[in-house]
Amino acid sequence: MDFRISVADSDITFPCAAGETVLDATERAGYAIPYSCRKGVCASCEGHLVAGAGRSPVQGTLTAPNERVLLCCLRPDTDMTITPRRIERRDPVMRRTLELSVYRITQPAADVSIVQLRLPTGVRVKFGAGQYLQIELEDGTRRNYSMANAPHESDGVQLHVRHVPGGRFSEGVLARLAKGDRLRVELPFGEFMLRDGSDRPAVLLATGTGFAPVKSIVEDAIKRRLERPLHLYWGARRAEDLYLASLAQKWHDSGRVRFVPVLSEADDAWSGRRGFVHEAVLDDFGSLAGYEVYACGNPSMTSAARECFVKAGLPEDDFFSDAFVHTG
Image (cartoon, rainbow, N blue to C red; front, top):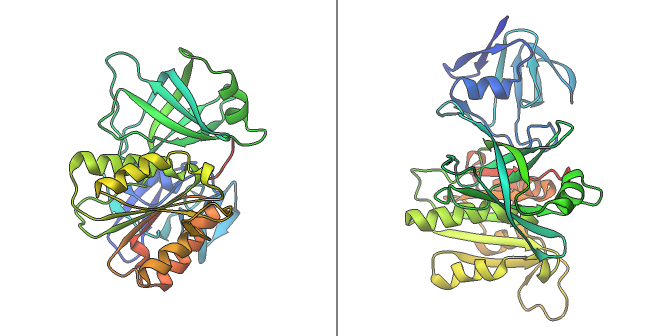
């Protein structure tokens, strides 16, 4: 049995099968709405339920009107009308499940590993700069990791893994991985991509390993010789947490990207910016009218940035985020 999903104040309508989430049905119909974790934690997919009823493993039984519904988990019980934060026409998602082999693991910081995975010989995958993949663990659970390489480097993927205490993957599986071991992954996922067709300056905001998708976006922009100005603000607690600061500084020195590192717990030797990274953006720009903002990392940062930047003149439709929910 199919239910009919309609988007308020538009002519968009599409079917949603019984037991299917609104997010999955949206993608199957060739549309894209904001989302990140797909687990009902980050709230990137939050929208309005205008009419109808449904259920969610996170929010329980839901009936209209409800202005804070997680569309990644919502399964309809009736026809319904929704208002997502944003909806765009997109080609239907074509994902692939593959066995990738471990090529190299390095550790640029005490709590971060960079994992380089190789695709099977002769296999290439298409993904957008800023998207992520899911690693399937032995028990069937999954972990999300952004691909830090640019799409033109299509013979493998690079992951930046934060070590989470007690994490099943980051402290369990990762510690045992060796060159040649295989991981089962599905890709690509995510809407955290630089919008084509815009020449507006973009503010790229990252905390921690939120730098991974930003790295992909910047390297793709450089490869494609995009002319739009890019301003990269990378926030961390200490200088050593900016684990690829030399790479970001190289972009800065080339004149292609303006790089501003910001530390919230800097020692006396630090001569750079201090405080919260989103507040550094506000200090530098004042009004954000005419900009696009791409924020990735800690959910508290992305939430605070959205609220503050909208107050500073940024249209909400020009704020794009990928909130990292650490499950380890």
